[in-house]
Image (cartoon, rainbow, N blue to C red):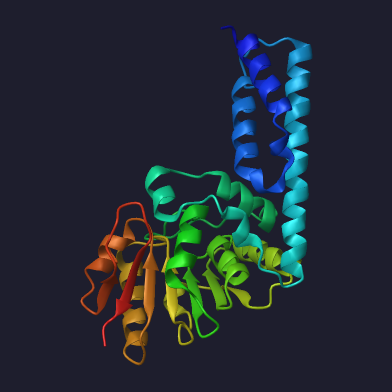
Length: 283
């Protein structure tokens, strides 16, 4: 089958599928857009009429998504918590095991949080600091579900970047949430996103995690923001906090192996590759 015939067939199927216009079918729309983009990439020989038809369909589906994100943002501003209901087809640990990289849930978060581009050039990282990468959305929802944060909890994201984890936890739970990030342009973006959603239980602090005030924290999150001596200094600070109260530490990425060797911590559940690891301080 030629590329044009395959695209024509796909367009026909999508145009007939009216369920794509229902808000709850975000995943289907994202997958449909990905399928269309695969045909519209550079180097594809497609007639102008068919190309325009495909582009029009993309615009239609993206418009449905934009209205969907806007409705969720309005609900969040009013103090609603309807975001989690839109991921009913997300299947927890099964989704974690079967997915790699980013997926449609990241599109959801991006559409809801609507980050602006950083206003300044990112500062060069010092030795021991790791380049920023956002935590995939499915892992954020997994973290929220497994930690069961309540109003008694205080989540501190060490190396929070643009604030994905901090913002989503503040939207989906009643916990107080703080992001600590060294890069000022990331902190500005996170603060603007929080203000645009009228979030009152979240704040972002520009600073070095080694010098941060951690005294309020009950749950700490690290997506391998640093390694080596910096990670050791932060773990030592967390151990001092654990001397006066129980804390939980959640890790993602390579730092989980280092944290798992800490004698003052015990793992919650089972350590799994490519999944957030949870630890609790020992009494």
